[in-house]
Length: 276
Image (cartoon, rainbow, N blue to C red; front, side, top):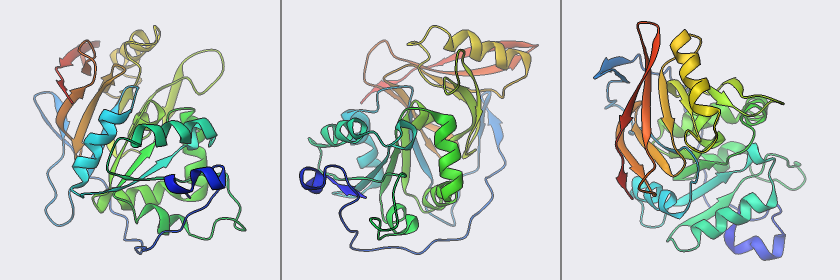
């Protein structure tokens, strides 16, 4: 794991130690959803910490990280970046530290391409000691395969259940849903199955890549994909449990949408965001 203050001396190696750790909890089944105003809503949980996810269609920069930090309720939250989808590229970690630099946060990075000779802490000791976890953009299909092979999917579920705020953009937003559209394979956009924390589907980059909107509407209209949420770049959604709590953006033209199936056709409803 990398901490910002060790960046220069470790050249993004797996340096830095966590002072405290938490033991893993039992995994629970996701809530069954009901529908309000056409969108799925799960009952709020009272027996444990509120579960929180903050996504963006693209561009999870300083304003989104600031908002995530606020959602933790901590004065100086520990925020972890998982650059798995970007194949642990150094530039991905550097951009994360730059985005965190203006904020009062303790920034960390955890690579997946590691060796036990250099990684002294278990995945649970790292992930479950954080206040927020951000997944990078990149290849969602590869991200999911690596997380499942390493057991990260189970730990992320435990982190979510404990109230650790999860989030990200692009692959880092898509990963929390049942399924969605992805550019993870050659030649054409395709579909990918993900963690399923939030019921339904997701399309990132809704306004930024020409093929995204027509494919998402086609798949939902035909019944091949579950209804779900689409986000333009620089726009996002904050979920408490699996309910939409707030829709936000960092660019005036950026919006979010709920796309459902009505009479065999896709129906797109705009979710008007507010600036953060």
